[in-house]
Image (cartoon, rainbow, N blue to C red):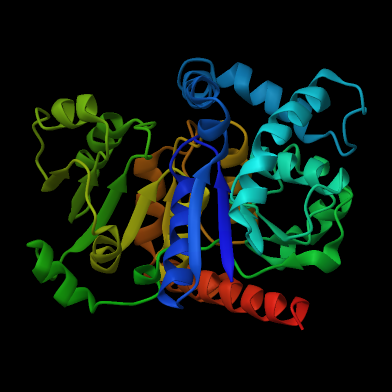
Length: 374
């Protein structure tokens, strides 16, 4: 059995999901490789898409939000001879030979743009392979209506069924396993032990404040709000790859304890040490937080899919959403003013969270390939 994971570079979430699936397959002894589809077809295209996404969300968020609101309402595929369809056919043809040469049994798409190319290959009868699309957020993104021929769709929850129907997708193909994440987020280190390993005070409320993978977020403003809050707590601050922000927050003088980090590879341990997490509601981070059963305060969502993630979490009682009119300091105060509120959040998270998504998906696909080869 051989598996190909197709991704596209727009943030780290899609690659992180693919990496989790790839590692699981390899641990099971299954051959699995990952390919950035645009990078393979035309590196310049990959760079344009990646940079275009970053620029639109960082420098033109209102415009990006309006555009997303328009395209998300579209539930029908584009016309056969539209420029979009023609462009995707050309790209799909470029990818066709690679897939034929690879002789894979399964193709897993962790980005809707790679899924649209695979969908065209199915339409053209170029491939006869088990195909899977991973919806990496708590909403069905625009363009999934272009992917109606895939065999399966992995979703975060059964609650996306209605959205899938509106997009014209066959809900019998839905696999609500949850978004695949790394296995360490399903394990738990005792809170006191986690705090000891991280060198923070073991008996104090501990917040985890995180930026996104692309540095999108107002960490400095959040630190100032938290520092002026009349509550006793300590905060771990993760700036990720945003070196400019890391330098900036290291120069902020605070009354409370703030432990400042750049890029880290032990977020799972930090979550175990934390009383709650303050972060953007990216699909992967949100899934990791739910897996850990950690109360979440959502801040600064990227326009479009992260706004939909925030709505999903808030409307289902899974998190608190800090806004301009309900700022972060008020959100933290309201959460910790009543300890029962924290326990209520944890109880609701337990109802909704998905465990071992990557393992469940890989086992499912191994069984399907075995049945197909009989």
